[in-house]
Every structure is written in C-alpha cells, then in structure tokens.
Length: 301
Ligand code: NDP
Image 1 (cartoon, rainbow, N blue to C red):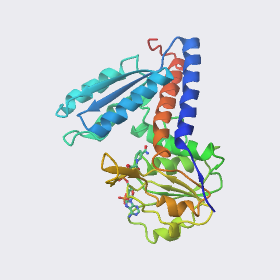
Image 2 (cartoon, rainbow, N blue to C red):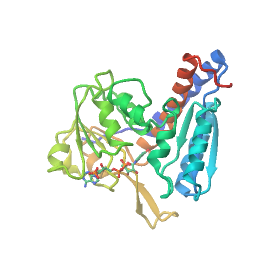
Image 3 (cartoon, rainbow, N blue to C red):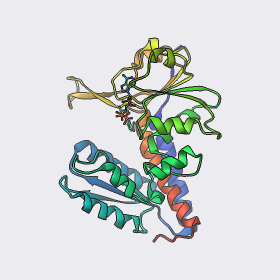
Image 4 (cartoon, protein in one colour):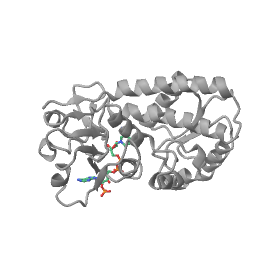
C-alpha cells in the first residue's frame, strides 16, 4: 500500500478562507472585528517567524492583530501586567503568549494569568478542564488541527483505536482528550504512550490511527505500524543537511518514506500538522469574538 499524502497546507488554506468569510459575515452583522494580541518576549528567531506568520495569517483573514514585543530580560511582573491589560482590552478576543519564554519567567504562571475567555491557545487549566469535561472551552490549536486533518480526509476516529505517542500538556494530552470525547468527530478508543511505556511497538502496531508527538526524528519505523494505519506526524525536528542553505531541514517523528509504504494515509513534515496550527488559531479567535458578542460583551469594532 502506498499512502495518501494528507496535504495540511492546502487544508489549512481552506480553513483560513472559511474563517475569512465567516469573520466578514460576523463583522457585517455585529460591527465587531475579531482581534488577536500576540506577546513575543526576546528575539528568538524561530519565535519571531512564528509570531510574524500568525500576524500575516490574521491580516489575510481580516482579523485585527497586534504584536507586543518585550525584551528578553523583561521582569515577570511587567509581562504579567501586559497580560492583565490585554485581558481588559476589548479590541482583543484572543491573547497568545509565544513559547518558550526566557528561563527567569514562570511560563505556567503567565499562561494561567491569561483570561480563560481569551485563551485561544487553549492552554489555561480552565480550558484544559473544560476539554476533559466535554465542555465548550478553547481547544489547543495543534490538537484541534490534528482532529481536522482526520475528519476532512474521511478518517473519522469513531470506534477506531487511536494511539498517541507523547503526553505533553500542549500536544499529546489534549489530542487524547479530544479523541476520547463522546461526540461526533471523536469517540475513539485511545491509548497514550510515553517514554516509560513498555514494548511501545506492540502498542503502536495495534493503532488504526497513530499520532506521533515525540520530538525525535524518524522515531516511528515501518515495523512499528500495521498495514493501512492512518499516521499523523506532529513532530517537527531540525536535522543537519549540508545541501540546504540554512544547514538543516525539518523532519517529523515518523520515518516517512518507509511508513508511507504501509500506511493508508500520512501527513508529511513539513506541510502536514504545522500549517493547521495557525489555521485553528484564527478559528479559535473568531469563535472567541462570537462568544463574547453572544454573551453581550461589546468589544470595539
Ligand atoms: P515534549 O518534549 O513536551 O513531549 C514529548 C513526549 O514524547 C513526552 O510525553 C515524552 O514522554 C514522549 N517521548 C519522548 N521520548 C519517547 C520515547 N523514546 N518513547 C515514547 N515516548 C517518548 O514535546 P511536545 O509535545 O511539545 O512536542 C512533540 C513534537 O511535536 C516536537 O517535535 C515539537 O516540535 C512538535 N510540535 C509541533 C507543533 C506543530 O505545530 N506542528 C506544535 C507543537 C509541537 P515523557 O512524558 O515520558 O517524557
């Protein structure tokens, strides 16, 4: 079997267009432009690119956005002050704190200070709790993107065995929580694996859908999957490549070429999960603006 390659880039563009149309309709009805505030601390080049791309995506979808740059040595209290101001700033329906933050800052404390109603990254414990309880909180963007990649390619997880390798708060745990929901688009039987899992290959081989969120290049080999598996590769790893101008290239957690021979569908890296993260951020920001409008809050147009 040679796998169908799931084109996350095309799907993300489609979702961004859908958000742009829905945002324009919402604006016409309510007079409100959905807005996203992005906080960037320091000058890490990768973070700068991520934030810039998120801003551009907002512009293209007609969402108001502003980037708040703080120096790498900013005091934690000053960062928390900014978050508080943005919590009360009705131009913004979403607040995004770009991670990682510098070592002297307690990331958890900062993320917890974002209003759960503006937490479009879905990282606040209240939204994590709502997700587990089956409520309507914000779902973290990458995991939400993984669900869309499955659903929009006809790979409904209902009744399937979904194996998630990785249990981070940002990726693995929320993916598992989404997949086990008693809801349409979920309803899977979920197994979560991690570095202390015994005999990992025997578990990954039983997956109908395998989600790799490990952070180790080419970790999932062909003999770790069964024929016909659907593979979603969240991993984004830099490996040296002297043929590239940058000196590196991005690869996933899955040994793509070999696994694609056995899988029925697979996401590439790059061009799979990555682009979906921004698309879902826009979607969450629009959702937030709509919720606030419904709740009678009146953010400025
Ligand atoms: P973390 O490092 O936080 O978590 C990695 C997880 O993998 C941990 O649960 C860890 O287990 C598990 N793990 C590590 N080694 C093994 C092993 N040998 N066997 C089984 N499990 C193992 O990473 P993240 O979840 O933040 O990210 C995972 C990957 O996804 C990274 O490559 C990251 O760059 C990428 N990513 C991509 C995004 C995108 O938009 N495409 C967004 C976010 C992340 P344990 O808990 O026991 O330590």
